[in-house]
Amino acid sequence: MPATTLQGLAPSRAIARPDIPHAVRGRFRRIKTALTGLMLGLYFLTPWLRWERGEGLPGQAVLFDLPGRRLLVFGLEFWPQDLPIAVGMLVFGAMALFFATTLAGRVWCGFACPQTVWSDLFFAVDRLIVRLVGKGASERRLRTLAWVLLALATGVGFTAYFIDAPSLPGLLLTGQAPAIAYATVLVLTGTTWLLAAYARERVCLHMCPWPRFQAALLDRQSLVVTYQDGRGEPRGRRRTPLRPDLAQPAPAAPAAPALMGLVAQAVAFSAPAPSPSLRGDCIDCTRCVTVCPTGVDIRRGLQMGCIGCGLCIDACNEVMVKLDRPEGLIRFDVESAPRRSFLAPPRVDWLRPKALAFGLAALLALGFSGYGMATLAQVSVHVEPQRNPPFVQLSDGSVRNDYALRLAHRRAGLARVVLHAEGLEGALLRLGTQDLPAADVVRVAIGSDRTLDERLLVVLPARAAPSGRRDVTVVVSEADTGEELARIPTYFWGPER
Ligand code: SF4
Ligand code: SF4
Image (cartoon, rainbow, N blue to C red; front, side, top):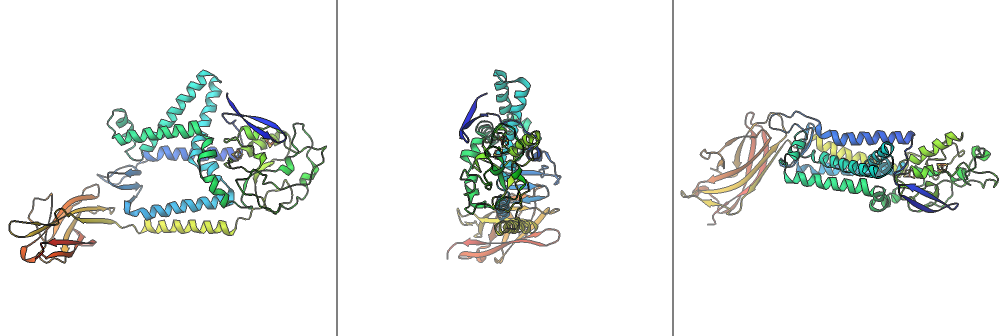
């Protein structure tokens, strides 16, 4: 198995890092496994959930219905004009991320980022294959096959959010799927293979901008993965008794703040220099490095490559338990909180102004989106005048204007509407597809897909036609109850006189 080498590790030891991080057991591994399973399950299973909306409407619970220009999410239906709700949700996501980062560092990166989730999946498959067939040519072939299949499943899974999921595999296999579906599968398969199978930790180390931003969000009270160098150093492989000073009160943190996330210096506080005859708790086994998905040696201090996944904590705790030493040599810790000893849990100030501000902003954005969802317009009507030509003069002298009418609604039971024009005395209306004489009120049935795309014709007798432009309002009402649903201001053109 090829290995990369980290040089310059104090006290002059090089670490051979495996290309597949070693497996580890522990609390953070369990949390990661649960979240990875949850997110992958949500991603792959959500398109298969069904939701009964009635005849003529898609039965998929979550569907980007591009031909219908809407997003269906269970009982909700969103249109392009509902974009502010999406913006509110994005702002909520950003503020929630800032809030979590301020409090607990890169928990998003370590546990929930899709790059982390998919890399974790690929690492797990790699480890399984190595365990089953050992290392060698068959292992490489099997790994490549597994990568392609996983990437393909991801591509098809993504496309299923846009096309009825149960029909999609059949459509793809029989060549009946639209070209854009094949293109989407291809692009997603390629990017998944590139990012999760090939690049993996390089994405976190070199491509993702988020580690650069997070430096501005962390402070000396943020929880970050920390190697307690005051307890672990001087490191050495020889097993020694627990240093007696570990249970003593520790000094305050250094005053100068470290530039979080960018400077490779220890976040852990300084401790009184131990006696040279004693060793610290770190036995330099390098287990914390070999389990790290990004290959970071956390003993060098907080680094940009550390995604805060906590696996090195689990690894080191395993070692400490075997050595009969207290856990927590590596742990989530804060830089500046007062401590009673190396072994006491860190005291975290959760109610910090910066965190509260981000939390409040997240709640406001969520409230904005929630309000938007609760007050969604139930009917959307667009009436666009056709301007080429702006009007048509008929053989009897009457003047006709054409409009593109688009109606969409998300209201149960709405099947028919009536249209009439206000502001133009004597105006008669007719739909392009209706073989009926024009009338002052036009009745129309809405399709079972809750949309209506029609050509609307408005005719004025010659004596009533305006010279030039005249404002007019198209009024849409519910056919059975007469309830007014929409008023759309537009205009009517007549020949200049
Ligand atoms: S796992 Fe713990 S004991 Fe082993 S090298 Fe890392 S910090 Fe030291
Ligand atoms: S050093 Fe590695 S294993 Fe430890 S938290 Fe950071 S990314 Fe995870």
